[in-house]
View 1 (cartoon, rainbow over the protein chains, first blue to last red):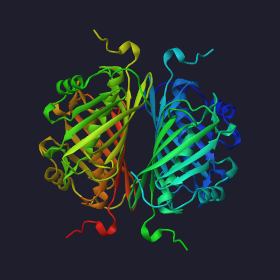
View 2 (view 1 turned 120 degrees about the vertical axis):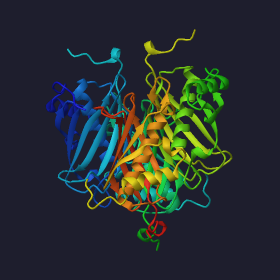
View 3 (view 1 turned 90 degrees about the vertical axis):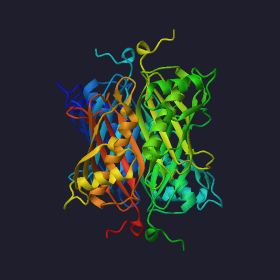
View 4 (view 1 turned 180 degrees about the horizontal axis):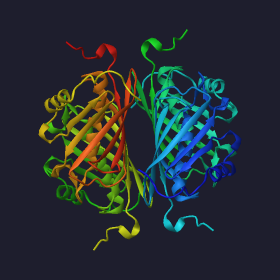
Length: 149
Length: 149
Length: 149
Length: 149
């Protein structure tokens, strides 16, 4: 699928939003791509992201998938803080070991009520995904949507 | 389903394992129940667990579901660090707002290769779940399993 | 969760609906329970429902889960033909071998846009489930809903 | 991901297997592509595949996803009747209306115990998918595997 027109949120706006919204923003993955229907986040791995054995933990990968999917929606809707995760399904395919993790989210469908994203998570430069997630966000109804000033 | 015999890991052993294994263990959910085929974890909510609006964030709930499911497997297998998450599917049902979150994981099936858990996540005392997860763990093959001393 | 008031569709209405709507209705599972927030369907197994080895096939179990979940929604909404499946997640837990299969669907959440059901599928009389499904239906918007005469 | 070497099952072998194994084989989707790590099935839509409104039904799409994923595994393993579905997750993205449906399954991971496939389902010639499924198959253990004669 392809979407026309520019992204409704820029990379800088996306990073500002994440920094303002979440705890310890310096530990967050940075948004590196915002184009219509697609967003990429890049995480520099720290000790807190690991599980025993030195693997990037499942919850770290799930958090990345959730966040990158959220940013991908916002490329099409602009800022919509009332948009919330409704379902997340993740398959862990192989060990995730490395210094940088990329989450690349693509919008598969956006309707009136739901947006569904496919997210590929892999170590930067790897030729195989560490995990793959499908994330569904519930969109606010028309009358609940944020209004641009 | 019911399982006979005692849990192969106690509540104290489960908490020691989590403390030793993960970053910032004081911020982890504590295990409060370990009985055959079931484990419960209890999280005291802190600022870092919240998303904008004061809700317990999706990643916090996913991490809890993953961990409680892991502990539930260990009630039946004992310590098996080679056991890894293979799939997690979570449905967010309603806002999760409160001071304490409980994740209650039940083993639905344990076979040679896989264990599948149903996890109910809710605010302590709430009569409805905030989210519900199905978590699948891949079990190590016989020849890779930890040996009790 | 419990729901107050009577079911908005009876068992007879549910079976009439299924007979009118689908191909070869005599081969369909019959609805046996319609109570607020819960529906049960009962399938008498035929050759066409089997896969090699004499197991009730995956697609048969998925179709049952989908249908029982649909009926469970209708206990709360009444007839709403615009209600459509949005997501289905099923875990096959153990072989499904026997003459009669039951699918027991419970509404976990019903909101403005989505209803989420938990479905237990097992051979009649068995003490363990053959499979477990979570099924999400998208509800029509207010202005698209069927109007009772 | 790419896989080297030829497919371990041909298109003809795949269709023979499906015809021998399932009820009413003339109503089945035909396999049209078997290449290493990928299989495609093609269904000519009949009345029995429809739900009210003339849409290809959810269970029809789920059955196709399951079958195409199975064939994709067999491109890498050869005939393995002990391989069984362990999990299927499907998102219905948009109405599926047309005369021919294609299910295109790609192997994302194959390990010792599990194979995970991504399946795209769409009307032949459509530029957007009607649904997308992730299907996990459990592989038989080494000592349970079929032996080629």
